[in-house]
Length: 261
Length: 253
Image (tube, rainbow over all chains, first blue to last red; front, side, top):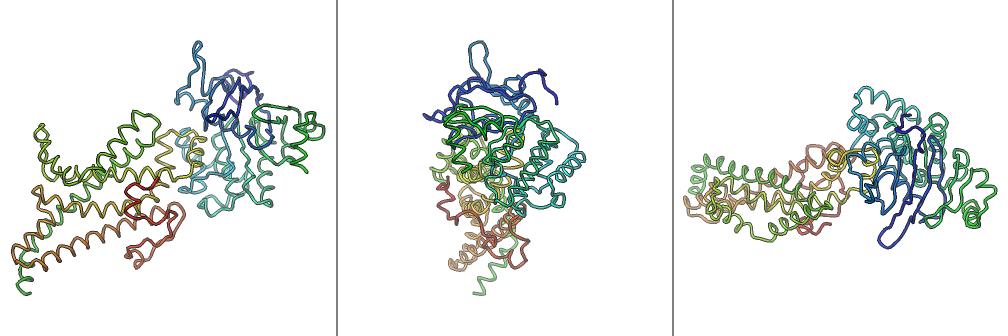
């Protein structure tokens, strides 16, 4: 993994503020994720978990504060005392290190499975097409669907689409992978297939992962650390064993009781 | 009646030239209109007020003024300021701007109909804005906009008949000449109607072909049979609500 500063955390949020109109979702959030760590964000809906991922993918604009990737300013920076947006050209350089998988897959319907996967490696990273195809085939193997290479995306089930979406994100060779409720739109019996794929990626790579999920068992298996959010703040932070068996905070206890039953 | 037929036969050699002028106006106008529609349609969507403001003003101006007056203005008024164009170019420019303004609303609406997740996924894959639009968003919006563009294209064809008033020898002019030759108003204008209809039908057919092709690329629909291609109604159920000229003219958001 290449980083500009070596020891800097993969992700750092510094006094991050996000408002939607009058609604303050994040109000001065601070946290950092070391290289290679797997972090699960849990908490009730509206607590700001998904907003954190969307800010990291530049799908939303910050209202204040800084996000640093490997210590590099990403979307905004201070020039003297002035808080200014980083131009898109420089954002793209940093964004290259970040990949995301969405709840609704968001495959491109005008492209085949293979084309979905190689589009950005070829046209954004400038990879040779043969090489991109070979990589895509290897990734399709990894997610367990080599035979679907030339299918249209709407010929696939939800679970298959999501596995292609995971392959597509990995084809960009990200240092950081954001997983936004990637099993929430799937039928229960298919969820396991997708989780198996993610488990294997967690086991065989050193990608930094940030996941928002309701699959608590999965979170427990793959995470190094779990952050419990409420109202845009971290209420509790612990390793998964402690968080799920012996939470300290009342808010966490109430939430886990509601989710786990 | 035989005199009518004789007059028609006499004028047949010039029918080709007349149809050619009408087609040049229609297709030239359509190409220009599409360019104008894309520029103004995307311009109306940007966050920059400096781009969006002028785009909206231009759209409202060209939609809100009469095509005949626009045509006369370009033909008679612009030369006063030193811009003199050939009549055919004037016709193409006026038709292109007028229908481009309507088309921009079709473009804007269709782009807005592409799910937000498609934009987001293309940002997550670090594509540039132009790359996102060209490879991901436009191919999907294109399939949505064709039925409405077909309406506009047919209207543009019929609008091109006004070019007769700026001295062009188009199909409308030819029809008038035919009536002068045989003095049979019913016969001559009926022939005129039929020729316009045939051209419109062929255009609709071509646009249906484009629509099928665009949908097949999105994994919807199958290769149509020859009989199906000649139907004027698209055979693949569209995901858009039925389009009427009124929605094509700007009701769509």
